[in-house]
Image 1 (cartoon, one colour):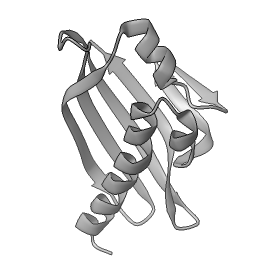
Image 2 (tube, one colour; image 1 turned 90 degrees about the vertical axis):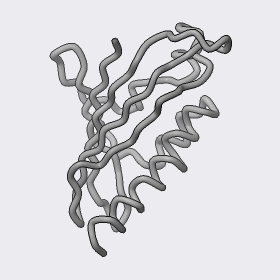
Image 3 (spheres, one colour; image 1 turned 45 degrees about the vertical axis):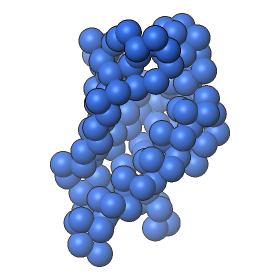
Length: 125
């Protein structure tokens, strides 16, 4: 498989599981593409978590987040066994007003032929 095919495969996986998990407030969908424990990098700390560190439902309740705009997903580095991906978006309320911008970094590895996320770092601003 060439790099473009690998990127298409990872992008599809991200959309089908990660984005759908957030849309549906369902971490169990996200869990299908995560290898636990997952490294969560935030505020200068690294924690190994046995469950996904971001709960979409709690995040939406806490911030009033309804939808995202200006979403981008880029895979700057990939090979047959590992990948680095970056996602950016603007989180908005139902009325369209902006809550915050988010930037996420994800590290993936192949486990038994399937992509699995093993590290996540996110920053909001």
